[in-house]
View 1 (tube, rainbow, N blue to C red):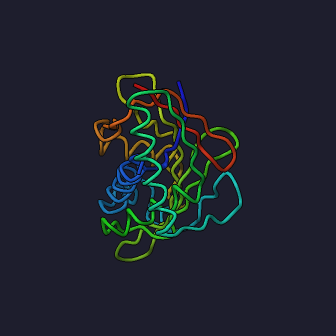
View 2 (cartoon, rainbow, N blue to C red; view 1 turned 90 degrees about the vertical axis):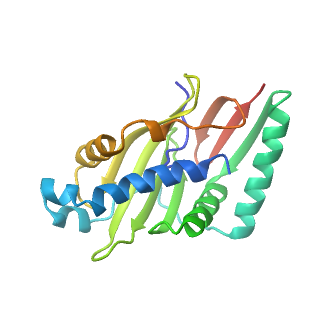
Length: 205
């Protein structure tokens, strides 16, 4: 099984339908918190206290200019991969920038988005869910499975405040099911590799 952004978040991305990955993860989190399911299970204090720590300690910048360049490069990658093997590398800044723009475009109630590519070979997305009342800090860890007919988001952990990861992950998985995790891409991805700070994607006809 190949690994990739969850991102999350997500990557989590995302532009490489990073936007779709991020949207799915953030909607899942909003469902969990907005419906109060976590509060019913373990008490609101666990959700609204604590900040889950990502795999690396660094600040990822973002900008609309980087987001636009990232999307332009993705379109070129799609065109090349339609007829011959192609590859593309994205950085954390690329994916975070696209994610921030996507959140703004869709008015998704999330702020302080950061997307990380971890040395261990998976992706993480962190952010703050901005809902009525106290905000909740969230971390999503995941991989991208390329073994089936469509890329599939494999969520490993969803951490919300001090809520145990297995509870957050289980409730979100139950609430949303599996349909949102399959990605409809114009390009056929053949491989994905994550290293510290970047992800490399390969595709082809």
